[in-house]
Image (cartoon, rainbow, N blue to C red):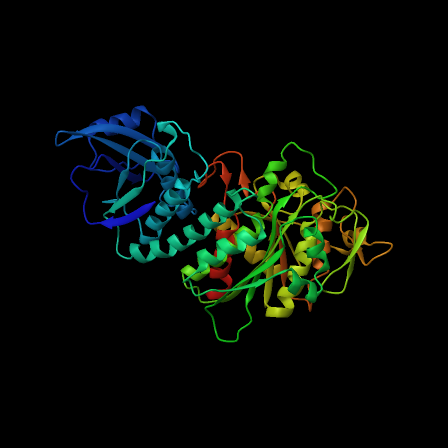
Length: 486
């Protein structure tokens, strides 16, 4: 979506949109539109839209109204995003190629305009690479938005928001691609191409390097696949020289069959997005690099494919992790924690971060607990948990804090190794978090975000269509803004 700023509405504009506060229609629109909006019960509520047709200078013009709700609403910018998204959803496949956003007299600030445009762009994202036969009404036509009457400073606000959109869109792309296209090596190559010229530094570990480091847990997950495993680290050094970085660690299981503990066939195709935690990390790092964030941060993703061949890990195997701790693998479908534990150890020893946040589509139990409304947050530090919940609430990537404790920890003790990779049927998300907690060294502030229910949507949401949501990118970016850059 190409977005440009202009001084006035161009002659010949066929589609013009206005952003409307609740109960306040633009003074410049025709009486027919006012009456039509009233007849359609358009009030200007956040995300509500109305379309009418008028004649101007002998031409029939489509005029859209999109509501942002009450002027004094606490979630004003979120409502602006909803308005932009409503316009995108209505006109993306409308046959129109260009939309003029008329902000004259809207009273919106530069930040609010940027929020409208962010919602419009994010809701416009589609990935039609593999669709070769579509009806005309299914094809995306809207390709450009001209913004007229924007207040001073909007260019800078939009440049910042555009970097966020880039990160979300890249995360969605990675999650959407099928597993025959995105696997550990091609994932790394896709990131290397996307980060070129951003100033970020990428480091890649292959299987020989990981074996030398003792990453028996991560390598055990991938040993049944012909696709070699990788670790990818993305370093952004925008803060004080030598200052310890924030660390984001993501689970990147590019396809998860369950291994020998094979998943049921129905729905297994969804497991292409079992790398959604890694996509959130990569997308957030792209945003930080593009907007030149004043922070030192590193994103580390463990990339594996979990397959059930003759060399695959067996239930009952014992593996030695990079930390030296041993794990009895009772279920090969509890593989994400095996990937993350070695990635966490390497991240801490290599980068010595001041805070760590890991993200993973880790447990189905998280979806049972929270559905598709919140990700689960587990933390060993109250302030870190509070910072993450605040950031998530601000951008709509919501979290709910879950408990940790010694009683849960006992549930993963093994009779023959330091721990098992699963506990009993109950408290499955909590025991998974307790497993990861055993790999946090030196009481480093750490949080685990189980986002199993959030990276893929079966129905459209605030700023996304069905499919990949890009959840986590905006959460991490806002977390950085609030707690590391301020």
